[in-house]
Length: 310
Length: 287
Image 1 (cartoon, each protein chain N blue to C red):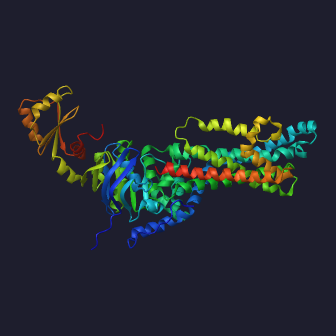
Image 2 (image 1 turned 60 degrees about the vertical axis):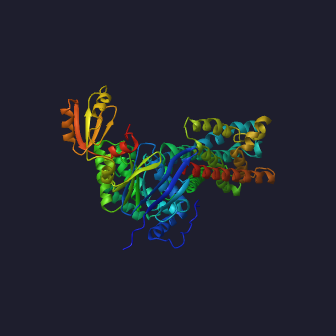
Image 3 (image 1 turned 135 degrees about the vertical axis):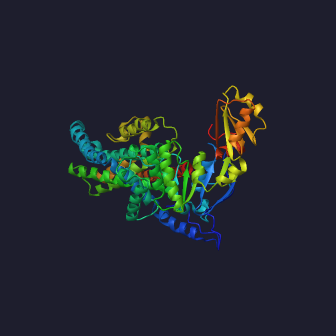
């Protein structure tokens, strides 16, 4: 059996804008059919990396191969095999919903008939069958995103790039979108997505890199990262904003690690309930307490000392 | 028309993926500009009614008001001195070129600003296999065809009004289209540079397009202007276009070298604006 060639291979990837280094030596590979995530706060270099993978922005240094081709030389060829869902919708608001798909499909040199068939299939996939003749501006934010995803699939791409796919959507719209993306993943589509939402990364990514200041802080599956950088459970305690600091000193040595945030104290431990009991027995009475599973949020906090969404 | 050449693969590294990509990129590389034009036509259809109404209404109103109404006054007062023909014949080619310039102004101003900024469809095209240069080429193709259609209709009305004595008059269709492009591609280049929209395009319309229309030998020969204003004509594509169109429609007497200058200036402006627009597009979309 041969190992499948990675569809994306980056080594020491660098992007500089003048003195500012947005991406500072990223190396990673994405296998076909994999769902790969770039997780990091705003300004970490995720979108810049996506633009380089998308063969629109040229790299300043390092190596990058997409589908075995160099984006500097074969930009249009590579882009003919990608589906791109940008952070800000760029649907044509002067056209109607279905027309957006028709026009976009033609960019790939597809025959009109093929494009029309696919447009109908994709409207169904995006749950927009009855909106085909609607104006784009009449769609809700969630519908626009789904239309953008449908547009990104019009060429049946080898790789679908999604930059912050659910940012700005309400919880219900996010869940609908995740469901659609999960279906694509099940169909074996290669997905690359950036996000600063932990739950999104945990649900959709087989593997991810945590990026901060343009560098990779960690790499692995969500479960691996949590195992490696956090404890099984987290005990969240609130003593009131003015008391947190003071109590934190008394809590030193509790669990594996204690993290003090402005509004709460996090105690990392294998058994949250037992830890809480010990703390209460010691005479400390939090106003509220909560035991939860560790998440990628905790991984990020551990790696960077900052929370993802400030 | 593609910016990036289809470079081959690294020796022996041809994977199925890479072969698929090279095959997928081949049609967009060849026809990408045309796909952009198709997109523009579909957008134009959304304001198709306006295009039709202005396309037919404008020549009718202008030729009647200037060529018939104003002409009665002018011809009575001057005899038929302006170029040796009646005022209708004198002013009609100017109105034709001016209509082309106005249409080009519409198509190369807000749609360009929109595509880069307010409704960034250009970045959407570029995320697909279309190169920045092809986006510009596609706009040029779509506007040339839109202009040609507008000008043909206008010319039809000129024939109806009896404003074209010369058999070579049809050349004015090409000349007017070129006049529109000469100004239009330069305007496109300027509109491509706008990052913060503070109403620059409205200023261009008021401070550039309107004076050009008035001082380009449109309604009266350039020689009637005081000498310190005549330079406006020389840098104005509308003056060069109008003079050239007059040569075509009624054999306006001018030295042959001047006719050549008109053609060269119009072509040079068109090409300069086009090339400049392509450069800006490449810089702006691939940052």
